[in-house]
Length: 221
Image (cartoon, rainbow, N blue to C red):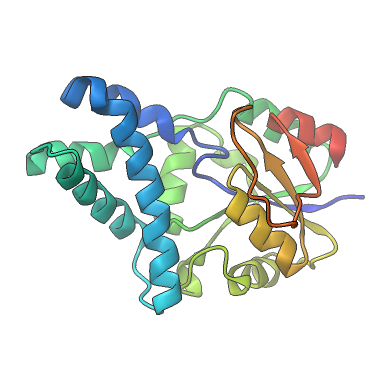
């Protein structure tokens, strides 16, 4: 069977740790803790805004999270340095397995869509930079419904935009909150466990399958 595949972008296709080198040059040994806190706070802000019905572009969550980290770590970054870090988020690299995995899935007849909390323009820029945009049939962003994952409205929006159904679509994501959201909505979902140390949230809602690389998804689907 051929499926419509929804690929999360940040952390699944695109390695958000790619910002580490820039941070290390700026702040040295605190770079890893700063980077992890930045990413976690970025997601937290999107969740909170979703609950409050206070949607903003995902880049605003990213910028606010950066400001938070500067305060917490007591690091005084100039406006230019912060702008450079924000720009770095637009040119992050893809994980090594991504291109080969997408090519195999495309060749086997599945429809591939990038599906993200980020804006269509931001995601397009990322995928162009990573040289994988031509492998996708399109981009679906939450900006049209103005609420973030894991709201069920977002997954419903994906099905509407791609003329797919719950039964013939899969979400592929490294983010457990995204996987749980999709499965709760009724889609099948593959959790990409990018690190063996990553723990899936013990909610009793499990992914349809667990993979460590996109090339493994070809075997599954």
